[in-house]
Image (cartoon, rainbow, N blue to C red; front, side, top):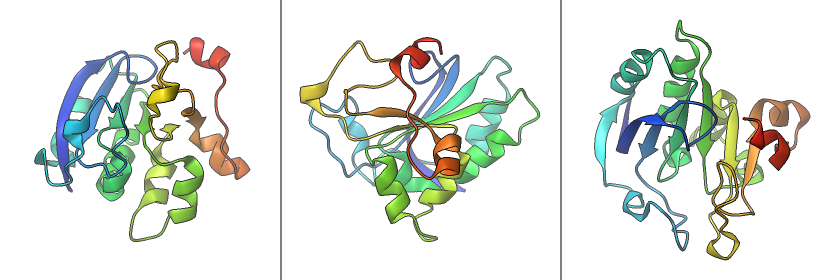
Amino acid sequence: MKFRCAGLTPESIVDGPGYRFTVWTQGCKHHCEGCQNPQTWDMNGGEETDTEDVLAQIAADPLLDGVTLSGGDPFYQAKPMAELAKKIHALDTPKLNIVAYTGFTYEELIAQANDENGYMELLKECDYLVDGRFVLAQRSLELKFRGSRNQRFIDVRKSLAEGKAIALDDETLSLM
């Protein structure tokens, strides 16, 4: 399946726990002040990429702990990102976790989810979600895996099971 890609980072230690492969999706309508990736806002920017090509790169690296979907906002391309995440979970490698970054809150994604936008498809394939728009006035370099204090690092599996957002606290995140 094709998607708009802003870039790929095959080796990252800052986009989630452990050693990660980061997919930078193209397109974001949040336009947060102070965004670190404003070049990813254009919905038609980047280049068309096939999820199978990205999957092959991920599968070729036996050292990975997980994959991060960032951007832009991967939920603007939820269906191809869900397909990619599902195939990553099916790889015959040690289980790779999926972290997605989004400007939407968990509650917004749940409330707006439908068959057409694929939000629930992608949420069900995520292990963790960093949610909420970046707020420049709440920016902190002390936060692990987040840019501003309003953002949460959510355990998606527990959240879906309990019917509400379950965020990991700073102490738990410091152990990751």
